[in-house]
Length: 114
Image 1 (cartoon, rainbow, N blue to C red):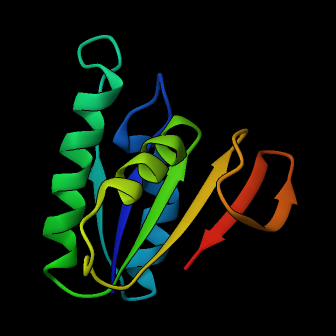
Image 2 (cartoon, rainbow, N blue to C red):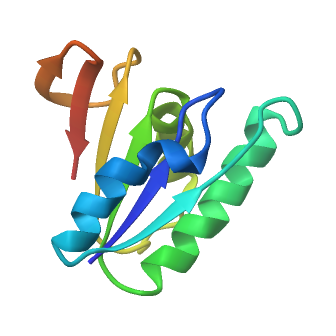
């Protein structure tokens, strides 16, 4: 199983390190997706993310993890994926609703979309 982490605005892929380390210990292969909103616009970031998810899907089942704007980007990218892009689960910690809530925390709504 693979996991891709997408950070929030103003952060970097390093912000996911504590979670990714735990996932690695549990046997998952982890990766990150980085972006800079000061350099790229939403649509170009989303297009790069779609391409990255398609590469990930070629390797089998995967989990997508987004924090804040990373969750919004993931929602847009998943919506743009072609049919047959593999089995995935998506988790997001964001102020933006992304699906059926699993639980609520002080950090926003955590969601799962199958």
